[in-house]
Amino acid sequence: MNKIDGMVSGTPPAGIQLRRPDLAYFTNEQMRSNENDEPIPEFCIEVISTFDQTNEIKIKLREYFKNGVKVVWLIIPNFLDVHF
Image (tube, rainbow, N blue to C red; front, side, top):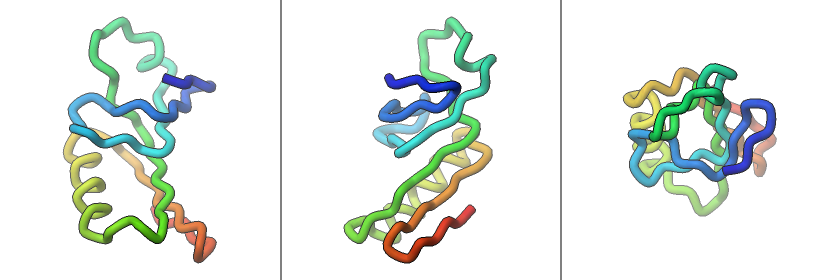
């Protein structure tokens, strides 16, 4: 797990099976938690590539929100777009 001021990269959030956001934000309280499971991030960022399938992105978003993620940004570099 790579931690930088509450931002974590490459870590699957708890309860989100096989889902790894490109970037995740955890509150200070979550970072200090001594729980065995990884906390659910408050905020996830997904960078969408030309190889990502629309249905898979929708499934991933549903899982994130179902498991407690509050905000997700989708970044589409090819179009210089950010959706939130």
